[in-house]
Image (tube, rainbow, N blue to C red; front, side, top):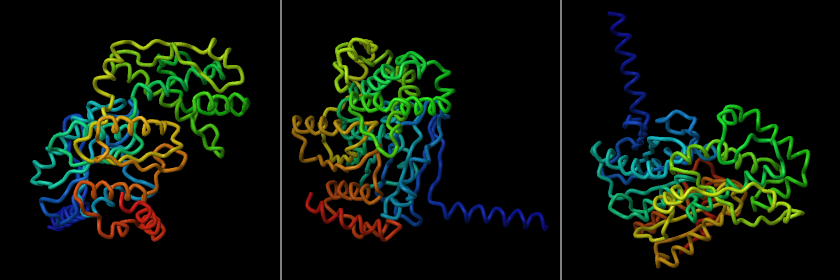
Length: 396
């Protein structure tokens, strides 16, 4: 009897604990879905779908990148729930370059959410980095699934250009620091991935030993950097070259980097640089894949808000300039709003800034602002920042 009573208490405690946690994981084939609904929410509660950013191909498939679900200690699902929305995210059925797979998976996620008995009036899509491109493509695609999107620091201007950004950084790095990384920039040996942690101090040491070459590297590649962390931008870009290259080749059906006719400028000897830098030619099959599935159009049948840090070293800010031009040429300016954030770093946003962007999206979609949205932020400092930003952007 005592054992049965103990088991009963454990069962009741488990039920109560799960009842207090609004987030429930669901297996979905190769993906995992995480759905968070505020307790007592109506079945027609609006939904926010989160498109996460790039995850290394070396990570296990089906694992939600929980490190991307918080911003400066603020839980994104909890923030969304406190605003009166349900929240849903998928791991995607593959890691690495997963634009096509992510697009299909997020539509399936919304369908699964409805199968649970919910019928959201509106579904908002928020994407970060790679997820920013997924969000943009899904909004451009149109259809009844998504009401509008918020794309944060995504490679939405020119995906060819994004591929070449990583490739250019690697070949220019190899020119200034030969032999530091194993060859080749377009075919990464497994040892480079396995030994990455030991390669990072070698990269940092080489750049510290030759600060002139390091400065030229950033000038030639036009990559922003933080003076307090002078090797951070280099390490981050080289990480993508090492971890993303082979997976991208597989996904795209060929090698996509092309610098045959690139003219590199910004060094103390541009002639020698352009004569000696390693050159590569893209495979036509890879370029066809990019043109068909990875480029944006700028045609917006529903509202899209974009945000980007101006000093982004990973996904350069010029993506926003190019995308704004596409929107203009497609006549979609009415549905488009861009918010630049003057700061160094990739996706280096403050919680108040992201909340502002989301609030502006909700207003564009529904015609109504989020009442007392700043109360969802956990500190008075964040709330004051939000009120200041809201005042500066009133009427946009």
